[in-house]
Image (cartoon, rainbow, N blue to C red; front, top):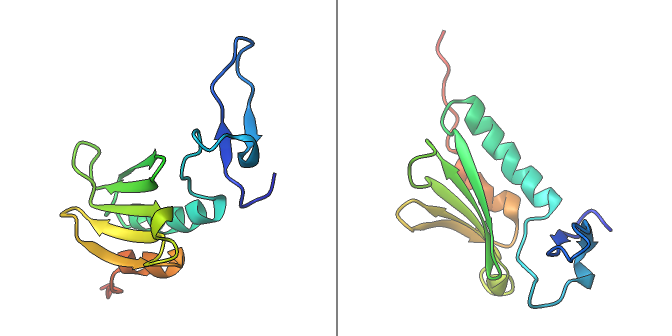
Length: 129
């Protein structure tokens, strides 16, 4: 199993849990869109900085057949502030990655996740003494 290959879990048989399988062994009907380890590292890097600044507090990951979504919350009881989406159907057209605001406005879309995440960084602030 390589670093960029997602881990896919199959439903248990009568013998119990079988553990992870390489994605190549999973049938097309069971395949879901996932974030790779490098993609999650880039997302969690931005997320960690915003949590340390006190701006964000919670997140959720939704994996579906069409797209994978990383939702960012200010509080867990609210609607997400931002959604980072990976939609493989748009990979060759507009880019697989997009950042969507709470109102549904697409803030940035592209082929490179790190360049798309720049929109979440915001402007640097002056720290007063």
